[in-house]
Length: 118
Image (cartoon, rainbow, N blue to C red; front, side, top):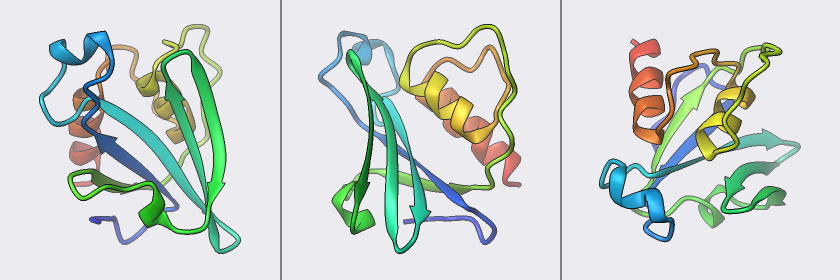
């Protein structure tokens, strides 16, 4: 797991072949979710097909697979925008406080986070 020295939230990028849009996305970064440490456990916020999942896990290893990419991020206050895509990227951007309307795919979000960390 790679993380920033100053991060209070983690973004996990995964390969997800189960969605019909997956064939149009980056081959290894097709889904994203947010993990927030809280009281020795982890809160997971994930938008999947048809539902929003928010749940707790004891160990971060319960969520992160061997091929997943994990990036630490310093969460900012979310803006109250009028428009948000109801996708994993839209929900992740909202959780992180990122207001970039033309970041639509998990790979674009990954590149944006990598650029901000430099």
